[in-house]
Amino acid sequence: MKIKKGFVLEKVGESYLACATGKLAREFSGLVKLNETGAFIWGLFANGDITLEVAADKMIAEYDISREIALRDIEAFAVNLKKNGILE
Amino acid sequence: MSEIAVTENNNIEEILERDGVYASVTNGCSMRPLFKTHRDMIVVTKPTKKLSKYDVALYRVSGKYILHRVIGIDEGRGVYIIRGDNTYSKEYIPFKKVIGVLVSFNRKGKRHDVTERGYRIYSVMWNAIYPLRYLARAFLSVPKRLLRKIFRKRSKET
Image (tube, rainbow over all chains, first blue to last red; front, top):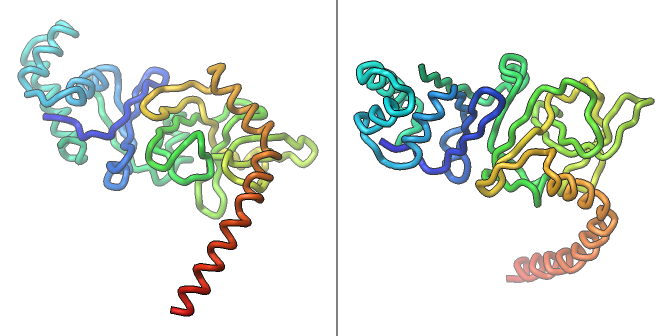
């Protein structure tokens, strides 16, 4: 799973905002708002094509949470990304 | 845990009212060379105080959102004197019509804050050399107009 090339993520205060630039701006005109954990997962999917399992491993290492919670959270996040046409 | 919300960028006033901050990809050429269409990302917040000279203001004219630079303030008339970095006419925008102010931006993939020294120098210098830019544009427009005339004549002849 990978986030489409062209998204730019910026930290603004306590939250993170992302929008599409370049050619992608023609097909995606929305504004994405994330919290810190959301931005962490976003970063995982933006930096390379990784599976949910690998993303969950990285999340467990970062946040010291159970595998079940990590997988559930990442799956829900990925569904949201897919629904909004953010994933490749 | 993680939170993600995707909103459409239709009503910036509403987003600024709700979140206090708004971000978007750049669109249009009126702020070149700073911003280029679809290349850069701007971050705007709701103004908490009166804007200063060289701040970049977001406002709406005839339904269209515009992001241009404050080049002066007319306290008597209660307006900002505004001009895009790549435009050659002044706009007079009432204080209350300004809905946002640029706080940071991502240009060519690099994040910048409007308080950065380099950016402040650009803002001041770009405005200071306006008369030169104006003359250069007027000078360059003559051959452009001539070429256009010649080619229009030729296309009519053929």
